[in-house]
Length: 365
Ligand code: 2NL
Image (tube, helix red, strand yellow):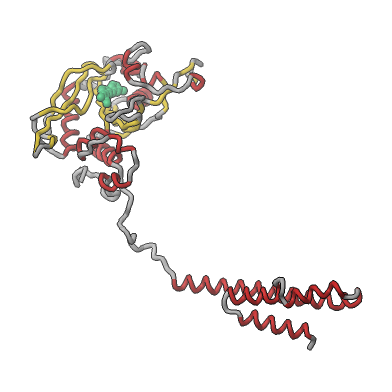
């Protein structure tokens, strides 16, 4: 056997014997590294005569290839053995419960929205949704709030720049804005569906207003009923039934006060009575009054603007802040904390995702 053949069989034996990636790497450095035995042989080729090189070249390169491929094959075998061992010893049973209690919670605003949808579904109301970017016709004009009406200024509207105006059917520019209330959703429902209509429209609304009790984005829910022969009695029954279900008390007392909204006539503001227990206000009784809702009979101009005959169709509407309802029901006192995303607050005030509100279970239980 030539020296090269002896070296080859000893290197292949070393490769075969290497039982860890580290041992194999040591063999590789020994043979193919800068100071390696195979590298040394390759260097001798340079000093050989052309005739000699023609004979030794293929032999030495054959050795290098045999060692290189032997190492690659062994490396793959070692790695798959390690993987198989890990697969056999490490297992993750995806059917086991999470090792720690679930961390996510349902935000109080989402919880209250789900409660409201459940309460109103039971009274035959569907949930309607619409765009948060609106045009000024759906947000204002259709609601009997003309261009010059002070309510437009009162609403602290976020307008988009004029370049972003959309074209209406006549090619006229429509001023675009972030909706200041969810009323445009109800306008869109009235212009696209035949009465009778019974909907609630919950969602985000925007006003350029920010202090301890106002955030530029907040949540509103409005309700709308359009049918024949609807009157204030229907409004009062609906709101009383809703508020008793929401606050989960039969002793909820309502007080209706005359008020003004451009889109309702007459307009009614609704207070609920509270009593003071251990220095804290609780809903129920009538020691004091808290304003919770605005409402009224839909103005005939609004019904007309939606293409309906106000002598045939009448209705009532109401609106209130979801954030405020959540604060009242669950005893939170800082509105701004709602939108901070502070995990400690969410852990404290959040709800279990598996507790879906139901009337039979008590909506907020
Ligand atoms: C409030 C008062 C209110 C309405 C909203 C309404 C919608 C249509 C027609 C007529 Cl399409 N009215 N919505 C009516 C009265 C009051 O909201 O204080 N919201 C926070």
